[in-house]
Image 1 (cartoon, rainbow, N blue to C red):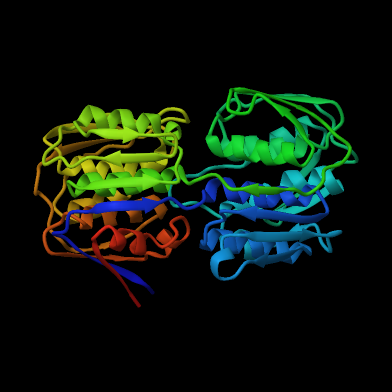
Image 2 (cartoon, one colour):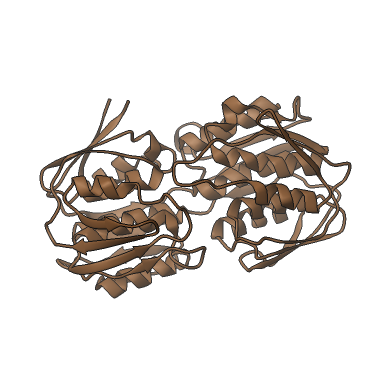
Amino acid sequence: MDKMLVISGNVLNGTVATSGAKNAALPILFSTLLAEGEHTFDNVPLLKDIDSTADLLKSLGCETVRGQGDSQHTLKIKVSKLKTFEAHYDLVRKMRASILCLGPMLAKYGEATVSLPGGCAIGTRPIDLHLDAMKALGAEIELRDGYVFAKAKKLQGGTVLFEKTTVGGTENLLMAAVLASGVTTIENAAKEPEIVDLANYLNKMGAKIVGQGTSVIKITGVEKLTPARHSIMPDRIEAGTLLIAGAITGGDVTVTKCQPHDLDALIMKMREAGFKIDITEDTMRVHPLKTWKAVDIITAPHPLFPTDLQAQFMALMTIAEGTSVITETVFENRFMHVNELMRLGADITPKTQVAVVRGKPKALSGAPVMATDLRASASLVLAGLVAKGSTEVSRIYHLDRGYENLEGKLVSLGAQVQRMH
């Protein structure tokens, strides 16, 4: 199993580009099930989760072709009549996002059998909100033998109020509603930029969606959609991670091919800590800073501080001056990186939803640590960049699910990072 060896001592400097967003690509790839023909996507990241999605689409009867060489970030999906409406457990268990094939198959074909997703390291993440939304449009849902059996003659538009904001639930409902009869209104919809990207692609296919990016989205159902071409938005979480990597080493790093306005909450908190950050329409630059002050964060749905950057920000706070309070409101188990950061010498007191981080410049020293989830693995690599000596991060297959060639990007900025088999 691969490990990552991180040797500290180097200040990161230079320019690095952001890859396409995993969390935008996954629902968009599943949306192809709504329209037969050839869909073409650019800026698709090279990630395990993208491969898992392609495998699931292939199992349903689609063809997927990834470009070679300079075109490796282009992915074509050819959709013909599906040979099965079942998303099998063996494929779904690898990736929770597989549940996103439910809405499109139900809308287009009137049936879907989808394995219940497995547990998730960072929390329960139940799919009951997805299922309630499908029922609100007239679907009959039955749970048995570890599967969701869904049927509907023709989905009917209606008003769905999510009692809790759900990104996946909003995405699944969006895809189901585009072919439903009449108008569907989603209230308390998630506002994440990735939902806007999905809605933009659905509209390119001929859907009628307005309000994406706000808490109320209106979808007027259409008879038919046709494939289109679309470039996946940049990954805001990767962009934020790279910006923090520059900051934690006291470096001068410019992140390109990003959308800084998607990261307003992070930029505000880094400026509060003392960092000078310049932004343009599609770049962010962090200037060198020797010491910075501790600041508090509270994670919450977009546009507030993203839970997916909490672990990386905590690494930054371990060597800040002063004490920061980090409050996690989105996932109940999102502090599993705390014990590993403590192995590197961080002074953190974790409670259920709050971690008190007593920052101390030059406090960290290298040690073997273990990644527990995708974002935790990134935070350990960032801490390794400044932990005296060398840090060995094991179980980095988590990292490969959401970061394309992170070690290559860090090395290009001057870091000493290498993958070990």
